[in-house]
Length: 121
Image 1 (cartoon, helix red, strand yellow):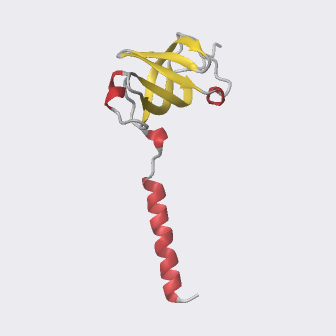
Image 2 (cartoon, one colour):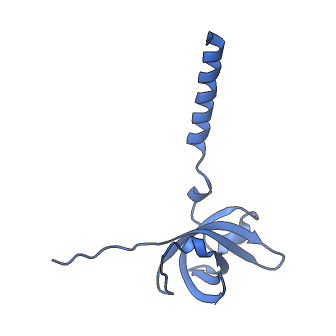
Image 3 (cartoon, helix red, strand yellow):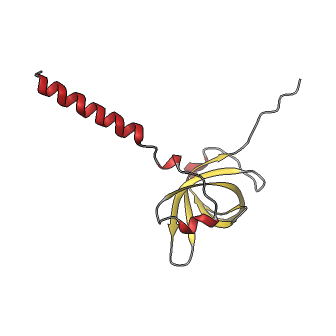
């Protein structure tokens, strides 16, 4: 391999490494409130913390935080065995969907927040 090929390969590897290090992905977005969803662009990613307060049927639920409520869609594969009740604080990450008359979130990940293990001696 000649020097030009080695230099080219090293340059390509450093660019790829820099790009990978800079990429945080949709999962690393800042937390927003339900009220702030209206200000986000369609198809943007959002992280919210609150509670699922009502099952609307199928994969649709009402999610509530201190600022308001929004309808969310949670596909079966997102649950991953997690059981959530209306009093459980959860964190959801998903894609914002603005239709002409309402905003929804298509949930891509869901986790309970603040769950801790209590050990008694």
